[in-house]
Amino acid sequence: MAFGWKVHGEGRGLAPGEVVKPDERLSWPRMVGFGAQHVIAMFGATFVFPLVMGLDPNVAVMMSGVATILFLLIVQGKVPSYLGTSASFVGAVVAIRAAQGDSATVTGAILVAGLVLALCGVAIHYLGVQVIHKIFPPVVTGAVVMLIGFGLAFVVADVYWPQDHWIALITMIVTFMIIALFKGFLGRIGILLGLVIGFLLSWLADKIFGDITAFNAGTSAVDTHPRVNFDAVASADWFGLPSFHGPEFKVSAIVLVLPAVIALIAENVGHVKAVGEMTGTDVDPYIGRAVIGDGVGTVLTSAVGGSPTTTYAENIGVMAATRVYSTAAYYIAGVIAILFGLIPKFGALVAATPGGVLGGITVILYGMIGLLGAKIWVENRVNFADPVNMLPIGAGIILAIGPVSHTITDDFSLAGIALGTIVVLGGYHLLRALSPSDVVKNSNG
Image 1: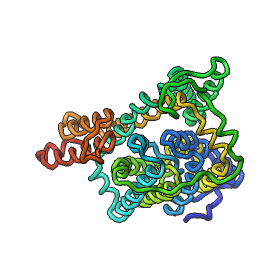
Image 2: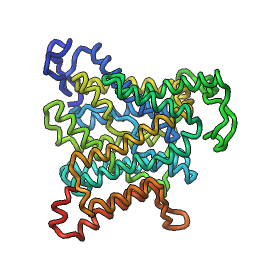
Image 3: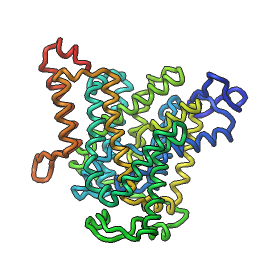
Image 4: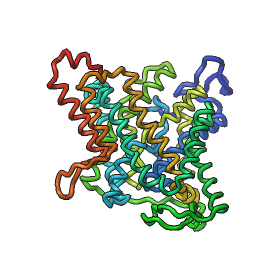
């Protein structure tokens, strides 16, 4: 079932304890409102992460809508989800650009990762989700998620924070307060609100204090420049297609992004299980389809210069708050996102976000990603008294945070997140194979 929703009750509202299931809907005007909420919920991260990766936010927003609609068709309308920009690729993209890779190289590498993800989804669909648990047990999955987040610490320290450390600090504190003090909808869009407030504060600082003398990411040097520059916004058209571009494939770049596939599988599995628990339905048979849908969405978006996709936890929060799980709301959200992508001036405004503001936002985002890995460990009671768990995990995380680079040949090396992931995955399975069976049995890994 992809279309043909049944009207829930009279289509006006919900009785206490009721939910609107994926194959149901309320009245269409109400569904448009719910769809708009989903757009707002995904909006902050979906355009922040393209900025961090140096990709066009307009393309990312538009293609997230396309990918979401495609995902819903692949899962046959059984798994309500929005596919927004994935944070899991940020570290690899930073490494690619540090090696002088351009946007075509970045999106080419992401496209291949999307293909691998889709193939993993096919395997899960036919072999069962247990195959993933065997290859990527909680101790490994948690470690990969953690090193993806913490492995980005150097980006904050070296790139964003030095551009305006006071604005970065204020933006961070404001975002802290919004997310922690507002438990409802405002708290769920705290990242977006923090970015907007930081943007306005930067503009006011230019008016009050004048230009800033600090590191300029555009020139890679310390110079005097305005915090906010609206020249590109003024010259951008109101309506038109975003700046699409094709991919370029380089093995060295592809190797860097492949570890993110592990995190995406974990995100998709967790998302489907969460939806099943909230709706009281068995959607486990659709886990493979969900992973396929995310992989195909990533392939499609990166093929035209867009960002990698993933199922968004932000939108699970909206569903939990509204108790409306209708996939009709997600189709509407997808259409709204596509329309947003047709406004180049909006994309130029997003791209004008000052580096100091991104510093305050990314320090939170990267830290939250890292701690999600710890959450996986806690929920699965991973035993770190066992050296099979402790040794490769600890080493892999340090290699990622460094970031440590290991030269393979004159023109190829493994570094940071990619190197850390290989050590975590390979080291864990090596030690597990060599350890006595009773030790492995009690490792909770």
